[in-house]
Amino acid sequence: MTTEGTAGTGTLAQALAAGTVVLDGGLSSELERSGHDLSGDLWSAALLRDAPEAIARVHQAFFEAGARVATTASYQASFAGFAAAGLDRAETERLLHLSVRLARNSADRAGRDAGPRWVAASVGPYGAVLAGGEEYTGAYLTPDWSGRRGGGLSVDELRHFHRPRLHALAAAEPDVLALETVPGLVEVEALLAEVADLGVPAWLSLTTVTGGDGQVRTRLGEDAAEAFAQARDVAEIIAVGVNCTDPREVPAAVRVAARESGKPVVVYPNSGESWDALARSWRGDPAFADEDVTGWVAAGARLVGGCCRVGPEQVAAISRTLGH
Figure 1: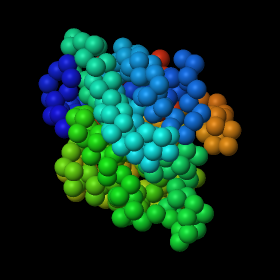
Figure 2: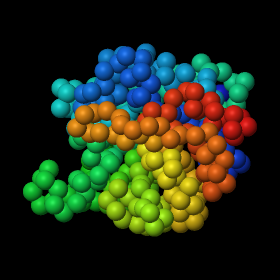
Figure 3: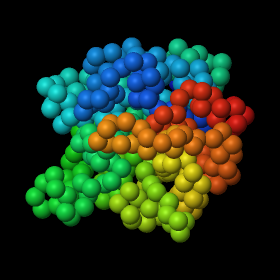
C-alpha cells in the first residue's frame, strides 16, 4: 500500500485532516454515456477485460474536472464473479491490479500542477456480485434470504468472500480501499475486521435512507449510527460516510457519521434518481444541487464527490464550490 498520493506528497488522511478533498463521480454512468453496454453481471468490471482504455478516459475526465481521488472500476469485480464469466484466479488478480494501474496512470498524466491525487480501490458489497441491485436492499443479510437455505450470510462467510479481493487490491498499492455501498451492520463488521487484519487505509461508506423521523438507517432498516460507531476505534479507517444515497438525505447522514465515528466524513451521493433493478435503469428526476455541498461540509464532510449519474460537470461544480 502506497503512502503518498500521485503528483504530490502526503497521504489522503493528512489531506482530509487539513481540509476538503474532491472525489470523482459515477464511473459506470460515464461509461454508459459513452456507449458501452454494462448490462451484464460484471457491470463496469467487464471493461477491465474488454475496453480498459475507456475506463482510463473516464478517470482522466474526472481529474480534468477537478477530482483529486479516482475510484477504480473494481466495484463489481470479485473472484466469484469473474469465475462465473470463465476467468481463472490469475486472470482475476491481473484485472484487479489493472483497475488500480489505470487510475494511477491517469493521475500521473494529469500532472503535478494542481496538487496531489490519490487512487481508491473500490470494494463493493456482496450484493454487487449478485448483480440484481441487492446492495440497495441488503436482503442477502436477512434470515429469510431466498438465495440459500438457512438464511443470510454470516460475518465469517462475508469475511471469507471479501478477503481474496481485498488482498489482491491491496497488493496493487492503491492509496486507500473504498469499502462502499454497504447495506447492513453484518457486512460492516466483516469488512472492518478484514481491513484491520490487513492493516491498510480504507474508508467505509454505507448506502442509507433517512426516514421522515430524521432517523438515518441502513438499507436493512438498522440504526446507521451503530455502523459508524463500529469504525471509531479502527485505526485503518480514515473516513466514514455514505454513497449512492439520495442527495436530499445526505445532511442527516453526515451529522450522524461525524458524531458517532469521530472521523472525517466521505459523501458521494447519486443524482437523486432511483435504480430499477428489474429494468436495469434509473427512474425519476435528478436532485443533485451544487449548493448542497456547502451544507454537507458544514455538517462534517471532508471527502466530497458523486456516485451513479454524477458526471464530470457536477464534479467540476463541486470543485468550484469548495474553492479548489
